[in-house]
Image (cartoon, rainbow, N blue to C red; front, side, top):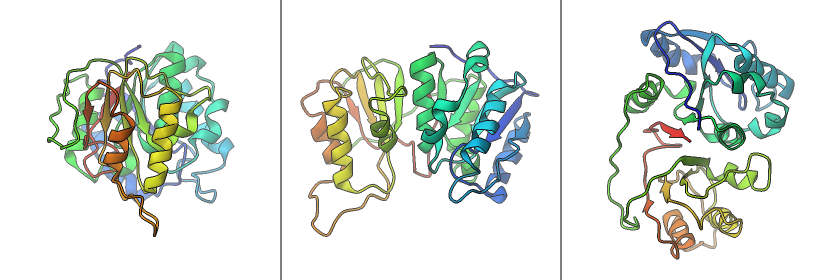
Amino acid sequence: MTHPPTLKKGDKIGIVAPAGKVDKESIIPALNKLHQWGFEVELGKDVFNEYHQFSGTDKERITDLQKMLDDKFIKCILCARGGYGMIRIIDRIDFTAFCKQPKWIAGYSDITVLHAHINKNFGIETIHSTMANGFANTEDSVETLRKVLFNLPLTYQVSPYQLNKMGEAQGEVVGGNLSLLYALIGSASDIDTTGKLLFIEDLGEYLYHIDRMMQSLKRAEKLNKLAGLIVDGMTELKDNKTEFGKTAEQIIYEAVADQNYPVCFNFPAGHIEKNLALVFG
């Protein structure tokens, strides 16, 4: 995998919104913090546009992201927020200039599509991390993003959980939002999980849908050759009147119960207040 260049003070970070719409007030903490770190910041021309739930039309979002990818002076692209929309435009993005001069791309949630596509097709590392609209959440989350950008070491310790499967594992980290990974199966952005550490997280899904997605990943042989599985706490999940009868953790555990690799639950990343940075790839 290609490791994008380490940033230094004076470098320029671009902020774009390739999915859901974002308001100006929500990214002010990010602008302040990035300036404190010594970076210049350039906002996408259409970053605050609105087109129904999107931050502009597909064409506007493509144009903004494409400009940041092609601009040799932009050293990192920080996505403003997730939401929905990246899957609508991923096949119309030209990554030619980006591949010649790789740069960090940071975000999570809907940005899983961008991570998966870049990691698989171009072999370039990306950052699963808090986005511009999340800098006010926790200092821990923001600090881990800073460490990645300045190439400082990251070491995490996670609290024990009763369903954890103990062991040692090493491999490239892949994954992101479970719903998006499920949606990408069979596409040009479908991830390769063989020998990898798979990270999954999700928000607001029904428990039966968590089961359906895990079973789909299992049938697609995404779970049988992992080096290990890393799971976020799964946030704000829902159930039907007729209860599914299992927690999300139990559902996930059962999907990989016949595998020998280690499994870590409740990793602090994803749609939670403490969203620690992971380098995909």
